[in-house]
Length: 261
Image (cartoon, rainbow, N blue to C red):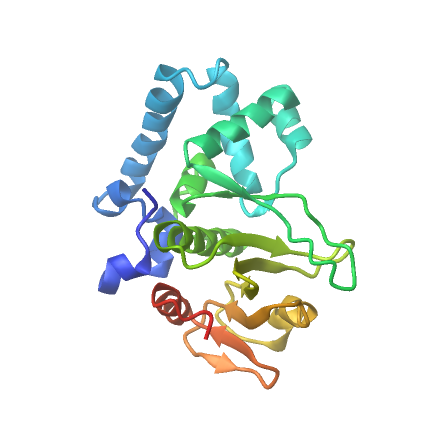
């Protein structure tokens, strides 16, 4: 089961609370979310991993978890994780597969559009819920500025996966990034021959610098809409046709299948 989405939470939806504690049903419905999150992670280790014997090296897996959490919303570096968790790289690869098999995390591949330049294809790694990421890192207080961007991006990714898997609103999802460049579009979703490019920024203030990736991807065959989802409350549309949406506007359009015009 995916975490709750804004459509399900209605007036209870609070982005700050979701980024701080996540929205896994068993956690969201409890008053003391911090303690429930701790118990949830411990239960996962005990029940899913030890009792089902999904990994043979439970101490190594326990060391691996807080380190892999640092790679949330980033390209995963198996060598670095292996070094810091003192586990062989081949075993780390198996640990990552366990997280995917148990639906705790997933990897997102880069899209090879060959749009004037070569693109990066190394997969990015996402946990399914921001509360899990913060618990594994031992962070429980208000979300800091330095972590907000990755948590927000990961939450939008889970939101997209939820509607893809439960309603079939689109078929595939990738990220897009030219090689040897800091330019990137966080998500590119395809339905048939058409696609929508989505950039995610946690900033509450809109400015033109947030649109670099969306402008770089203009001209991609089949591209029907470019969307910036940001942390502010006001919706805009630029002169070159890019939609700037608040979280509420984006989640409403996604749930109503209105991303495709």
